[in-house]
Length: 454
Image 1 (cartoon, rainbow, N blue to C red):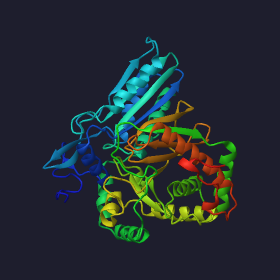
Image 2: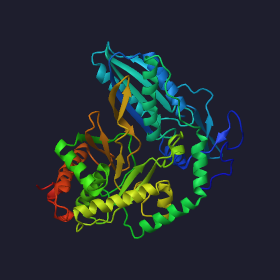
Image 3: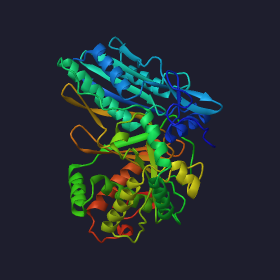
């Protein structure tokens, strides 16, 4: 579909109500939601806040942070079949103050409230795309809930909104002004994308992906089939034991890489063993914000890019980590090139699959928020649509590693996702403790029904 010719900043006019183009990521979300409005593409989170919270003051902090990060300042219209964003006439985020203390089970009531809101279909042209709530479940416990539609912001912006809320509220509690906001206008992301698409950098990225993915096989799912995303997901998580965490850190230091890369190498090797397919493809969820300007720009820029490490059953563990590190660095260096363009130009993913294989999401810096000097863990209710399976690496309030598996229930049952998670955690321990030159295929293998044999 050709994009209509419009002014790159204001769409068709200047001043209030002027139309502005969407980023490519927003366009993809728009048409996906138009096709499947019954499955809202929401980002939803809760934080269990303890102590004496000034609810009206905190609600105001949410509104200010939403305005600063551009989450509440735009709405969307459609003209001649194409979406545009326009400045909102009112940019106040609805923040619901809900007292549940008189109910028999306030926590269960809070869960029902948040579930109903994050699951409700959204009219992306008319409904509020952002909402928040403070659900009081006891005298010293408030559940902070935030839901932002993926059309308005990506996970990078939502994480920044939550951190900024904590900063604004904490400053107000101490009677001082918060540090000045560094966020720019929404048009900067659109401008930057237009500049990128006509640049030599874009040409280099295109050439990189064409070369990197030449001869790549179509991604293989752990479920061996594909399906449309669902309203719900199935998920499980656990904390990495301290001894395993220490070994991961040792491996990363030994090879001059990161903890996330070592975990990614372990998962790529697990995927290879579980599917029996050498040269596996996995998908890396990226912010696509390599510059300071983009990291301060509202809107949606997030992307999914393939990681092709070329490992096989005969690849030694040490070499597998190096190969995944090289492929990941390459993917990050070319992360602005859109998933949709890679799929259209190279055709390695079927229309039904959506991704380049299981999704890896490194969220180590987005899992906590500080409010009045206390650090709280951010719990994800919805992190966007899940086509197949998503593996997220987080850190908790104690800086321990947490590995979470989330699956599409049309492909995996709760038992399936728990089984894969347990097998991967066991496999990762073998992977990181094996001798450097042990082949992936020589690690303790999978028996019947993919049971890990110790």
